[in-house]
Length: 126
Image (cartoon, rainbow, N blue to C red; front, side, top):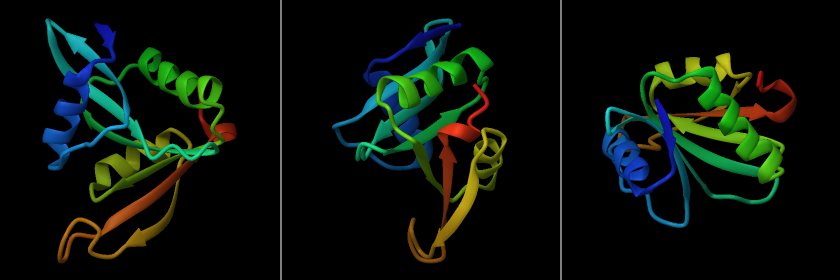
């Protein structure tokens, strides 16, 4: 496993969530055997908050610790915002200390609602 931060990560995540991810963003991913298998793309930075889009599998504690270090130590954010229509992503965010804060009706198109999940610095396990 290798942690990578190139444009392949944004392309990987964008393809799997079904949308183009436009700059500016920062990306961090997991590479195995030369292929990106998981990734997180950070955008919509406001100072105290940053949005993250995630996709893939094979997340490790080391990778999640790097995500936390980047967001909470390097950027000095106090929260991560996750918007998703996937219940599995909500469960992952909850395991990382997140709480569902709302539902955006038709966020991803007609009949496709989006969950809003907030992960606070003090609740992030790593």
